[in-house]
Length: 210
Ligand code: ADP
Ligand code: MG
Ligand code: MG
Image 1: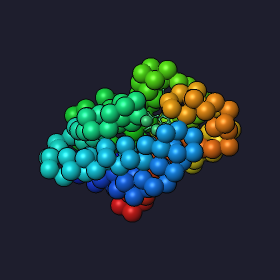
Image 2: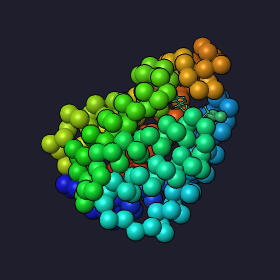
Image 3: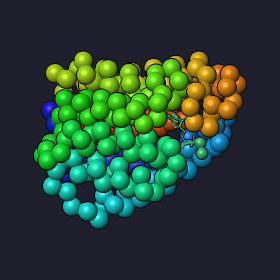
Image 4: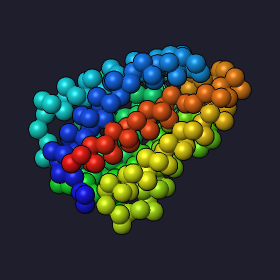
């Protein structure tokens, strides 16, 4: 598939939302091992509100779907991860304002902006056991596959995110609540990186069935 329409983008985000809501117990369990156990609940609350908002609003461009998603997460989740996960969607908003469709280049550029913003806001970088460990490799992959159609590019990007997620098991947490546990976080994967992987995985699944 070359690109998604505004309506398809909205349906894709709704699928992402349900994918995260459904995995709340898994995300909670991961954050309980190395953090404070609230990640799944925070994400679930945010995405439940996102589904509500997307269903009641009409969208005339791709950017505003991502903008409403980001704003809704920001307003409902609170805490550091609310801001950081909102930034993931806000990055794509910034590069897809007024666009009537979303192609591989738009998604790659958008998520590259997200990585930049998340690094700026949170101060973390790859290797610090955060969401960036899954997102950054996915963006690198997407950026080098701009010429591929969305399904192929996102399939590679999702694989890269999964590899990055696996890597987090080796890292010591340097940010968030997990930081307090220091080297005791080795052996466990990061909760936020897990969410990033599921977000990309659900985007891919949506595109595959379209
Ligand atoms: P909190 O740590 O405030 O309880 P959550 O449990 O919802 O928030 O989210 C934790 C996740 O947020 C971590 O697993 C990590 O991926 C991500 N995270 C935390 N701090 C940062 C940061 N400074 N930069 C990037 N990601 C971060
Ligand atoms: Mg937490
Ligand atoms: Mg917390």
